[in-house]
Length: 287
Ligand code: NAD
Image (cartoon, rainbow, N blue to C red; front, side, top):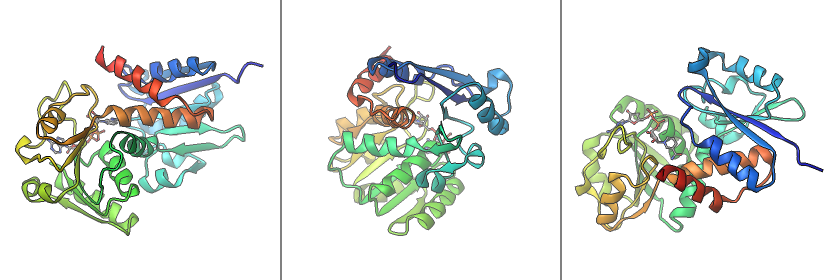
């Protein structure tokens, strides 16, 4: 008997260039699954993101089995779901919705699990007692939550938008009572980094459209591990500087691949071949 076919969508704005359709469908083919993954660009369709609840209803009626949800709908979608897993509910953001056979919609956040899985894969044994996170936006929020779940006990959030970092710090501190979470100004980095196990970079700086580094390479030292979540390109200026300074490094491909492997597993119930998906992802990014 052929396995049940899967129809999956990626809902958001500007989703056209996403690598997710290729990643999911190539892995599904290798697993022998009948699996179609389509982008659903709300901007192109001239549908307001605030109508995400209706989009869920339409998608289910049109036969979709699951949706990945991205900017700007990750928070908006939460109130429209029947169930939200505890990590996603605590964060108030969902990036994967599965339509159950029982008619219920279930939300998950594989940005959080994806960063955690990628981190343990790429920097096994790295100490996470004290970590600095530069960038407290959408992705930074998921990364911060993942770091605290990995056991981080002192997390310093640094963002150009100091008020945003302070709000996130308060929210995280309330939910992760074992840890101290604080927002710090940029000019605190020279004091923070010598005392820190590692630094995660989660701003757009370093992407092709925003070249450069968010902070000075002079602050890097060999005892520090450095993780960048930017993945286009994979070899960012920050990672090049970190390697030159003798730091252990983690590129953004690990998070990107594992948010996809975790979503694939939730959607299909099948554990994908993460190594195969990683190789495929890296070939796509190198193109
Ligand atoms: P966002 O716009 O929600 O947040 C970016 C944050 O960075 C903002 O709070 C902004 O104030 C801050 N910022 C910008 N420039 C800064 C600087 N020079 N120094 C300090 N703070 C600065 O964006 P996002 O959705 O969080 O995405 C950030 C980046 O993360 C993206 O550009 C993307 O490359 C990457 N990303 C990677 C993955 C992955 O799977 N690897 C997933 C999502 C996003």
